[in-house]
Structures are given as C-alpha cells and as structure tokens.
Length: 174
Image 1: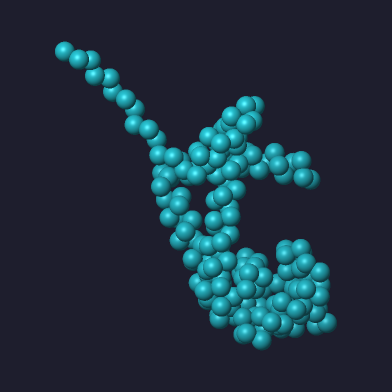
Image 2: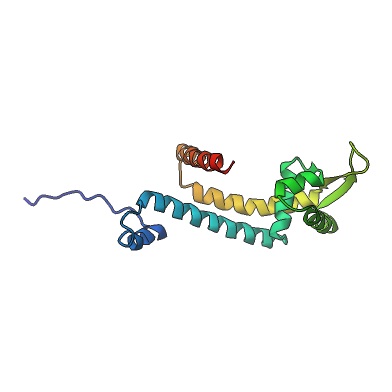
C-alpha cells in the first residue's frame, strides 16, 4: 500500500513574496521578516494614500482642503487659525489662503472670537462637515475591507505590535 503524506498547502503569495525572492539571493544578510513587514506596510500606506486622494477628488475636494477640514473636525468643528496652523504644520499665510478658499466654498465660517474680539474662530459648517465625512467614508470603507480579513483579536494584535514599533521611532525622533 503506497504511503500518502499530507502536504501542507502552499500559502498564498503576494507581491512582496516575489520581491523577497528577488532580493534574498542578492542580499544574503537581508532579514525576510523585517523586509517583508516594511515593504508590506509601505505598499499598504501608498495604496491607502491613493484611495484617499481619489475619494477626496471624487467629492470635489483637494487633499489640502480635506486635511484642513479633517483637523477642524477633529477639534470639535471650531478652532483658532493658530491651532490649525500648528496642527497642519503650516506658515500663517498658507493657513489664511486655505481658510479663505474653504470659506468661499461655504465649508467654514470665520466668526469673532468669544475670548478676544481682535481674533477669529474658524467654524466647520454643515456643508464642510458633509464634504469631509463623505471623503472620509471612502477611506474608511477601504480600511475596513482590507483589515476585515483579520479577526478582532488579530486587528488588536496588529495595532499593539505597530504601537510598539512606533514608540521606538517616536522616542528617537523626540
């Protein structure tokens, strides 16, 4: 009677597996787990960036407009221009230009500051919130589609592992 051995099925391969196949013979000291993780994170980040740009464009926004609305929404829908400048890491004139364009489109309002009448507060309008939310939903759907292949525990583990890596990066950057 012939002996049958159960072979493990070959796991599916992605683009990075081919990348590793090409580079491991050239760079024998290359750690395939580090290279694989970094390459996959980089490709995923680029993919999500393209999805965001397309989603933003599909709703008639430029990336810088979406970024400004996003920061403003993250501050509860109102902020001082100086807060937005700091959050976006921009020069004062750049923020002023963005805010003028967003105000012309009806996405933000400038109102006198309740704390100092010489200053203004920026308020996110309903139209601005709707445009931001629609563009954000495009990215959110793609993130859920991609990470939805993982269980809740796997997603938590991935997030925890990436936090550990980021804490190392952030401690060196500070």
